Length: 237
Image (cartoon, rainbow, N blue to C red; front, side, top):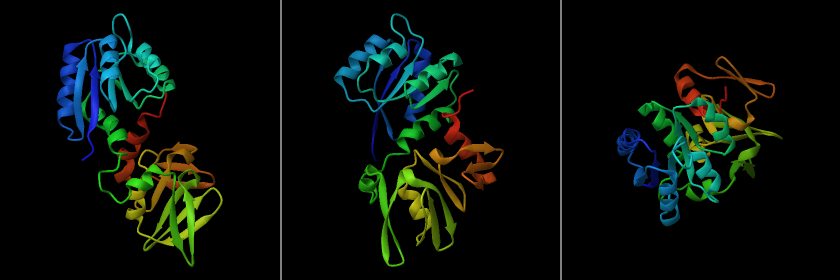
């Protein structure tokens, strides 16, 4: 199991203790340290490798946002604060997620899943493929290269799938579940037993319907909550 080295930074002790308790419930997280100031956090980041940083915004002397701007190669960052007005500024800094205090475990877990859920486990067949931005699929007497970025959505046809791209539709004898496992989970999500969509291709959401070009794809009742959690960190306002 891949371990995500985690650092928790907050000037309030109860907040640190809460995040420690939440992190202890997730096997993939290993907390390598805590800090009660941005200055102390910077020292830890210089000494230890960190994959995930829970960073409070409002701290004395140096704020979390000021620290984040100072880091040349920051880890994945989840901002935590009691003030929602900092959300837009946080996303401009390309943070993984933004948690508003008081933080519930369910919301904490969704934030962590954006990083942990997108990482392949050691020994998986797809480990190398996920490092790339494409895959190959057999269809008829051809082997076609498909770029992740070109995929709009994928449609299940029982024993076959139809891959809708920006330039073509590819029909291949392939299990939908197998294909779902190969796609990077940070961009692709299954919204229905029939459809997997590339979130980058979605132009509009109306109720339970996604608009991708001229296509309108339904989000099933069973997938609605998962989909809304998936896009939660991407919605501003």
